[in-house]
Image (cartoon, rainbow, N blue to C red; front, side, top):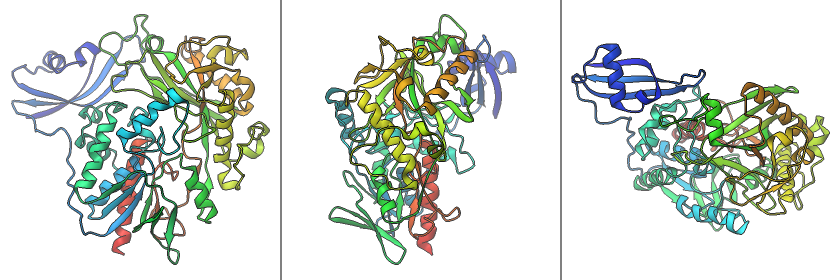
Length: 531
């Protein structure tokens, strides 16, 4: 017999199967001998009160052995000799699109401008040592995309768009812990992701697909308003195209604009990466001066408020994580956050960002007073938000002495309009330089951040502190451009055979939603081939 229960237990009891069994014996009358196994289906932490509880949905196998598999397997057939399609980009959108194409009997050819995930690590490690960014292999470009070195968070609200459970099960099939199927806010960890991504690539190749690294798309090949492939240097690849280039492929956006392929500017959010000692966040969130103790994970937080008609909120929170240099080219300084699976760094960080609408660029003078980036010409309204990103990143790079040394300021000093004469220790390895961020950031952003931090300090006593440091700038929260596509077919509104996909096309906001969109695009491409 199999029974399922919703239970609420304290962390020590939730930490082990034996503890859960003990609770079920005491509260539900089940004997230890009857319970052959207990499987946790859902897990979340309730830290709203001083007494912390863990909410669990459990499946209990009573006098019955559990099934072997804790996740649903997907069958991937051999697709050699089948109709083929081109997938541009090997981030989550591209990888899940390629795997879904195989499911549907289509042979994927994946082209990725960057290197394999393991080779990519070497170039990322060089950034702190040399202060130089390889424009084709960095935190944004390469196998796995931006998500590969950004904690691997799998939480999404995009449940209406597709099968989130399917995405999580495919990750498990390629080596992820089955904990991601149960946790309310699942994550893979930057230390675990490379092997999972490599396993996904090996599935594509084993089934007859192709994966090409250091292969950059130069042009989309068209015949009579129909996309028939791409050109990469001297090579061409034939087939309809899933375009999943990620949110930092600015050269692709410029290419589309110059070719007259319809795109539009999109709202984004910009701000800073805010870093606290993780011990302090644990004490605040768990209402305990002793911190999280033995049985609780590094604490998370989520804040949102409204200031001047725009949202101010925390984004991509990394408990027990590190702040990393996320620029994808020269004359840029961008930061992001990541954490390993254990989330055991002495620091916790999150993006703290201000909502920015396209119309704000025309209405607010402070947004347009940033210095232009040398060598980059304004191309028009469709690229206006991207060009604002570039100007803000260039300004931060100038403040960082034209290196990856990041401009920074203590949190309370920023709120009170004071300079920071020294800075706390930080996880950001290229180094910090103290600058008055309230002075040089656009007033549209800085004033809202200041008030937002005051509001968050009232919501959570101790959060607004000079123990926290702001590190600039956080600009890559989402794509600044949307590549227009038909709602039903997911093809570009004018070009048959072109399927803009994932976060880079403006239709996703993280690993899981990009994976879901990749699967949807693959389904539509398979239908297109039938037609």
